[in-house]
Length: 138
Image (tube, rainbow, N blue to C red):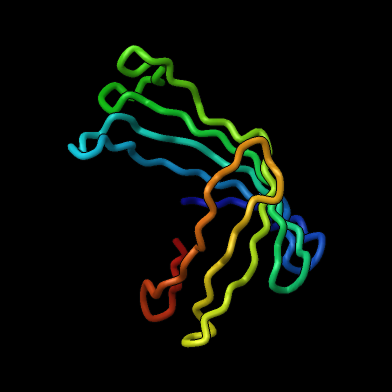
């Protein structure tokens, strides 16, 4: 994922953020064949508000669309069924710092949906080392 923020504008408070833009792309695979059935593209616009040092509330809007894996044209149907973009007009998430007694530097992020038009599954965002000085969250 790529991120872009506005560094010229100061944060409203420590731990809070101006708008952050996330861009994602990937493929949708058929199971169990592994055949690519669509390319996926999308973006998210979010803003974070610090609730306390271990808790950020994220306000978010996002959209994802599907493209033909060969022509890259927008998909409007697949196997005779309509295909529409996935839109999250608005969502509010809480992101809380978890604990890891074995390695306090490697704590998970625990997301939860506070409010939104759709319920989505929220799994812990787990850290792992991706080099001697890089931590990757996924």
